[in-house]
Length: 509
Ligand SMILES: *[C@@H]1O[C@H](CO)[C@@H](O)[C@H](O)[C@H]1NC(C)=O
Ligand SMILES: *[C@@H]1O[C@H](CO)[C@@H](O)[C@H](O)[C@H]1NC(C)=O
Ligand SMILES: *[C@@H]1O[C@H](CO)[C@@H](O)[C@H](O)[C@H]1NC(C)=O
Ligand SMILES: *[C@@H]1O[C@H](CO)[C@@H](O)[C@H](O)[C@H]1NC(C)=O
Ligand SMILES: *[C@@H]1O[C@H](CO)[C@@H](O)[C@H](O)[C@H]1NC(C)=O
Image 1 (cartoon, rainbow, N blue to C red):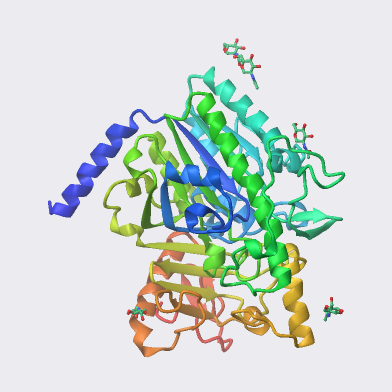
Image 2: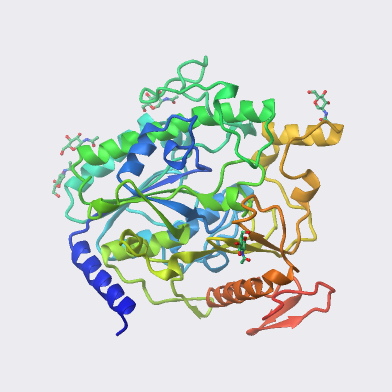
């Protein structure tokens, strides 16, 4: 046995010994939450509670979502399968009506069969019900989402109730808290502004959230991310977002306090991340880094030596299910979906808590199809530490916009400035934002803002070929029905050309 294999073996053994005592899991999932935390280098925002969580976590510098959309992302967290495999192609609610396949085996169902108690509080936004069944459910599916998802006092009550019941229950638990912040709000029936006034105790008629002490910012107090224009409209929008972040941050503090008060802080694994990037152009619904990158922290009471440390290991929301099963020592069930044996392609992230994470932690894949039912824009992505390859299947169409990504002050200002010919200090233009090349290859070291497409550059021929091959293999293993588009049709296991003058599909396939 060579020495590195031997090392892996030792690491594995020590993991198993340590995990024999492991008990519970708490997943804290933000909604459209990005990197606006002190722990992620933001110098303007106040985030004492998330920073405190970071101080007792391993913080990932390279966390990513598997898909840049709400229900799809949540389905990946709870199935470990990409959306093209689990069936949750787009949003679940109202006219969008997307659901996972009826025989998908989700995390709460697998754990339930293994005598582990499961609970969900806040935003669920998934279906069908039987696939995503938890023992304890207080979610927006049956309760007012504003209360159980954003009112942190109301949420605290349910968290306490669940933990209280667990104290009187010999089974370990999984508790998943889907916090609705910092998602934009439907004020006056239109989804565009932030929900910063709800319960702030300052705005007449919006009530009070007793546990929230709002932090208020001025336009000069916000950091403008590189992918947004520095305009008064953007600054005003960010001021409201920052205030909303203070409710999110204080919620995290409250829920962690409940965990501690109930006596579970020393045997509970805490995972913190978000479903997709912040609700702004180039971020949410996109798989450029502002949409694909996520805050990502793992706090393990059995790995205190990792607390407050940072890792460059690459993590994906697709890794959460395998990581939780690994923690509980529960095997992934054998089953088939659409005739294909289902296998897990995510990673066991607890192995990242060891000093030398395995080499496999050097890339992630993403697969995006819809957001709203009208937003047909499938993308397949491979990202390594230094390179990103994006395949835009519907590249001939203009990139579609979600309601909240249209009706927000930042985007309306971009539209207005473009239409009226006023200066727009943005890293891209509306035209470039709407019309994308079929394949996009970026060198993130020399071009972290993903501006220069390297497809066709001979210097990158080999790296592109390698990435395309890896991506194609992953799509095949995970049974992607879209994998021959846009140039050919999937017939059995092969891609038969349509001769439609779209030269590609996979050039090297
Ligand atoms: C917690 O459990 C105790 C009994 O063990 C009960 O008296 C109390 O009301 C419970 N609190 C909540 C919030 O459920
Ligand atoms: C605790 O469990 C016992 C026995 O199952 C039950 O009678 C009691 O009501 C439970 N208490 C709470 C607070 O759930
Ligand atoms: C938040 O929840 C608490 C406790 O249920 C309630 O008293 C308060 O009125 C709620 N606040 C808002 C703004 O709905
Ligand atoms: C842009 O904004 C100005 C000032 O608010 C407004 O008068 C004008 O109608 C807007 N133009 C467009 C094209 O929306
Ligand atoms: C990406 O750019 C960096 C900095 O210019 C360079 O060192 C590296 O070789 C490039 N990557 C590839 C794969 O060519």
